[in-house]
Length: 202
Ligand SMILES: C[S@@+](CC[C@H](N)C(=O)[O-])C[C@H]1O[C@@H](n2cnc3c(N)ncnc32)[C@H](O)[C@@H]1O
Image (tube, rainbow, N blue to C red):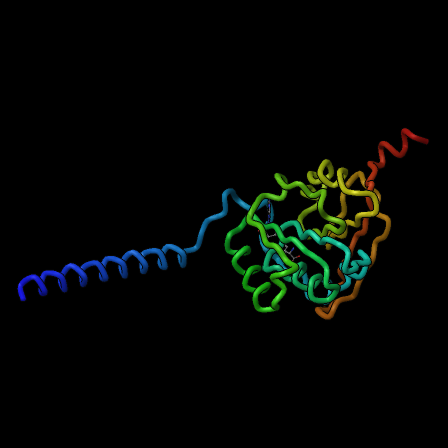
């Protein structure tokens, strides 16, 4: 009888410890993870109708691979996958944004098409992309030029609001969105050329 009690106590303590470890893990998972470094720009979402206009301007098809650099809550990559059936990759440095993007991917059942990565866009190989979407800052667009110059010919780059100093866009669209604001969208096509290089060639 005494041995039975001993067994019950050991089992009980074991169960309690397992529960404590599990709840500790759950608490750790729930606490907000900090970005590996400060994001270069804060999260401001592109309005949904502007997202659609950007993808339309980039002439996205099901054969494209759309990369959103700084994907925020994942709305651009999820829209691309849902509307065009293409593959899409969203990259964000902020774990909170990655979590939101993954939730959106799951909610829209596009896990088979969309990948969300936590990382720094300046450390990424962008060559698998055929469409790049941006809503960053003018200086960050310029900082991306060396990576964008490596894109496959015919790849498109669309940027919400901000241009890329030194690289002439193929098109600039002023779109009056449902929020009553006129949003500017820039389009470039690879291979992108610096205006300086173009002048030298002439
Ligand atoms: C203005 S929001 C744009 C969000 C989304 N692309 C959209 O248009 O709705 C910019 C996003 O870039 C992310 N970000 C800033 N610096 C970054 C970096 N170096 N690498 C990856 N993501 C970054 C921010 O966390 C933020 O979510």
